[in-house]
Length: 464
Image 1 (spheres, helix red, strand yellow):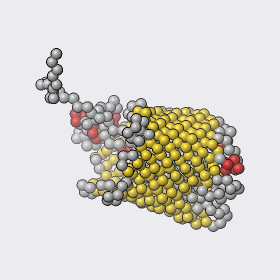
Image 2: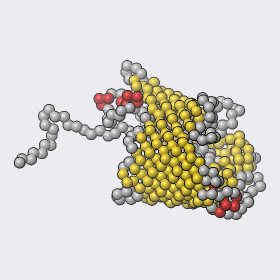
Image 3: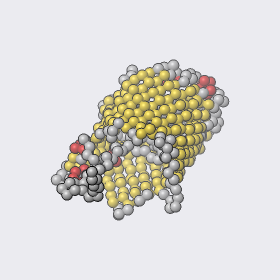
Image 4: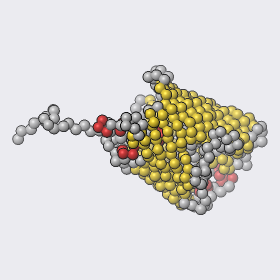
């Protein structure tokens, strides 16, 4: 028997080159760009069965195009002792979204998205229930300044999240993600990003097309947001930096020791990145000042989150340790308030059960994640929550007073065990399972009902 090894393909036989799969869908669907489908003959990726709706040419030169997409996300939630009461609930919910992304040229983008949120329970639920509405609708002008600098101007209803989403979160957990009626100017230069913006949060209503555009409506009750955000790197330094100023105004806010108009100015610094292959870090310092209910504000927050990945081991264990400290009011009844305002934080910041908000809290949070396969991830966490100030209360997402705090000196709010399971079935279909068990602490026992909370939520997501 003769064995012949060929280093070149036989004459008349084509050499096959394996192409990578198409890019993953982005968290912000408006950022997706399918211009690589302009010429299918030179498409660098494997074909997808929905390519025909991702790039629809609108002119003969294929310079203008339309892309369609969306998400179908059914979920079942079960609560045992919801909100520390003896109330049990099980219900079905769903998110349906459909978007159209139009590029008139590579410099002009028009993006529109419709949302439907549904919860099968007796009472409709804020951020979960909305029959049909315009979730996003904006125009973006992309202006190249030179080879290294670009300017992006956006106006209209749009999603936005900055940094670690501590203050400006997307609200991915509930059915209706957070949007703003907003104007933004974004400047890019290599690793530098500077963003200037002003807008108002969109408050979801329950009907059909009843989420009004309120950017220029001075009488609207929608919370206002403005600010200046920057991301940059320092030469010969490890990681990236964020320095930002955020302004917040709400006509109605309720804290343990203040109520009424809430105007805050927030200055923050965040450092994050990798140290070698194994270490990952994220540290943020935030200061707030302003006036709430006629009282002077001096509040602050500190967060540090460190992870070590054993990348050489089979399951690639990721050990994490996070510490959150968020200020609370020092003295009840005085003319000052130190309660931190998390502004537009993600209600699922601590868990999908959305039990407590990052206000007046010290949180100690170890975690472990494992990857049995490339498509499967298991995340286990244990979080302990204590009141930072014994004269301030406990808050529900995003910043509502849930329990007054001046009647007891107890600090322990409780402990929470969490389990998350993620499985990527294919590029379009994902399965998530989130489970949490909250053990009520002494503070809850002294201030009202204190039942332990069990919550489980299996979720399917089909994106297209």
